[in-house]
Amino acid sequence: MNSSRPYLVRALYEWIVDNDCTPHMLVNAEYPAVQVPQSFASDGQIVLNISPNAVRHLHMDNEAVSFEGRFGGVAHTLFVPAGAILGIYARENGQGMVFELEPPLLDDEDEEEDDNVEPDDDGPQGGGQPPRPSGRPSLKVVK
Image: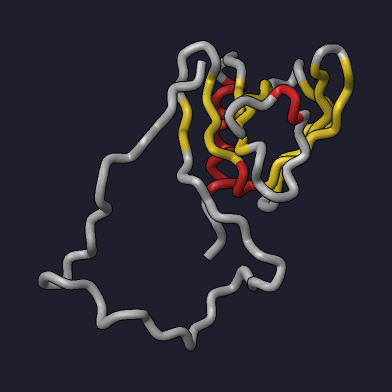
């Protein structure tokens, strides 16, 4: 099954713009194939203003988001694979969505799952209940 991330990013982008807000995208700047101005990244992340008046040639598909933007007055072509998008939100009110960190696909991995793969164990323990994740999720507030 395809990742829902690119679909949600496109939908939230449209919703944010339709509500006259400024869409910002949080990106893992260290993700493979990401092309962003690294000098503007902090702690391996960068926040990009992707509003229609801030970028040119915005293209969003299931693989990546690409556009032209200016940083410090210098034009850059940016390319952000869908897996590198950590969140999208409205600058004015913070409404949007944060995504889980997605490991990059290796070149030799197929995007299709192999139907012949056997599970590593005998299934869920404890009466059919799925295992619960341990620990608390860690989110970082970006302003």
